[in-house]
Length: 333
Image (cartoon, rainbow, N blue to C red):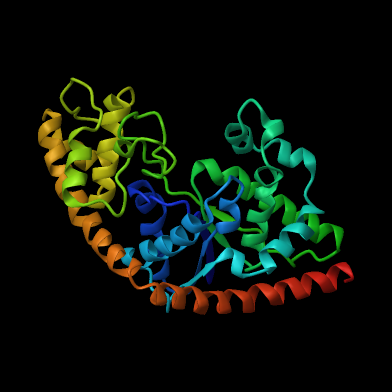
């Protein structure tokens, strides 16, 4: 059975090792699978749910493309494009918003977290962006969506909206119901300063994350200063449960080494953190620094990144505009 995978990354700058382990590295693996079509979108419409500096936003779109390509995404194998350049996404969001229900959106926990206590001041875009996400996914007849636990609820909403539209217009198989692809190990990489807080591009402290464009010295320094506890590294996974910082660093090492946690535990059981951090620095530099070098090279060649976006946009537009046309026929436009 053939797969069609869709995923998006917000162009908000400072892509970090958590984005690489949790998303981008998987994108590369997916594109090399047989009978698999991969569509990767720079979701700049989602980014503007909070205010963006226009010049920075343009630059961040190019930087995200550079990160994709530097990490191994092949624009000849995968469709890579900019969301706002394909009008069908916004058009689809409006139409699907007429099938979505307020009660469904009111249950979205991520809006409550991002809006905070004063949700009356949050933008309408932040509230309805799961409907735009549904449009992103459904326009391409997506069969699978790689999601973290924090996005799983939005994919369930996408399925609800698809089913409601199919039922309302007596078109039972028009929208496919996409399945989640959840990375069981290490999909949530945590802050280097706080092991219970997710690593985030928006964290004001640069020391909380390893950015994909960090230098070797910066990587070593950040890992050296990463928060740990006073005990030696444990010998089994159960002992990690109440040691979030140790668990996070071991998870990063295991992911980049492409081995399970138990093997990493065997390797470092009883050792102190200084020894482990030296090894962690080595593997992070081995995997991340080549990406950093290539990103810096690609960012200087705007014509190249713009060419990738133009070609990808043309391919995405062809698929999405056809789906919009079919939607319009069904609803009577």
